[in-house]
Amino acid sequence: FRVASNPYTWFTMEALEETWRNLQKIIKERELELQKEQRRQEENDKLRQEFAQHANAFHQWIQETRTYLLDGSCMVEESGTLESQLEATKRKHQEIRAMRSQLKKIEDLGAAMEEALILDNKYTEHSTVGLAQQWDQLDQLGMRMQHNLEQQIQARNTTGVTEEALKEFSMMFKHFDKDKSGRLNHQEFKSCLRSLGYDLPMVEEGEPDPEFEAILDTVDPNRDGHVSLQEYMAFMISRETENVKSSEEIESAFRALSSEGKAYVTKEELYQNLSREQADYCISHMKPYMDSKGRELPSAYDYVEFTRSLFVN
Image (cartoon, rainbow, N blue to C red; front, side, top):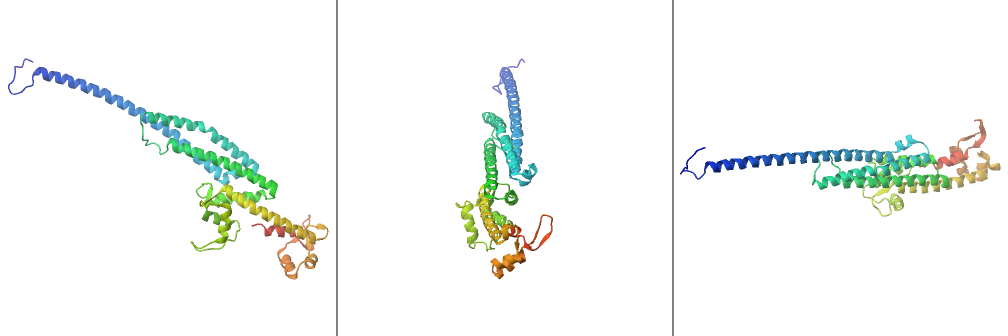
């Protein structure tokens, strides 16, 4: 352009052309920066999605495994015996330990996100720290469940507590553990005891309950507000052991009344050795004794079934 000087402006054509070239250069540089930032954001989003995919799946596995360990029906489906339940729990605990490698993968992805200064993730609500804590709690739960089953097996083998009674205790606990936390609050624990036949008095809220407080002194002495499965089972086993011992003592007493230590006692033997009131009570509550062929023996009463029925609860 051949433009002469213009007294009305200080811009020259050369200056405008230089400004235009600089603007084009700046636009190109900005486009490159935006493209670079777009690639960075896309890579960050892929990292977010990869972390979320692993984190969400890991959290779901934690929830399902926790439910498996705490849900009584799952354990019953696995097998009916305490030994097979223990083996199933051990296998599940080995799986928990093996999943530590998956948590390590999540931790590595989390570290990569931190390095990329990614502080948010719209694809998941889970964090590396939170999942690590949940895995550790699950690992501890697996060990506690193993210990609890070992405790039940030992109690069955050494104290005379039946496996059926132990199953009932465990199933009842899990029934009242509505949130699958592995522990009962005091109200849930009281309801559980009542369902097992404990005749606890009904008291108004805020009123003293000395009978229940005495039980809490055993299972929750520090009053943290909860009773764990292990604390509950230890309490129930100790109570059932007391019942077994008392039941055996009463059976032995009836056996001493019967001639030759038979499994039944006659009407005459009851009236000869007990007061009339005691004998009347036994006769009215004892079932007639049936021999091995299912025949009813005259004036013979089944003291074994009678004694055990007294200690069902």
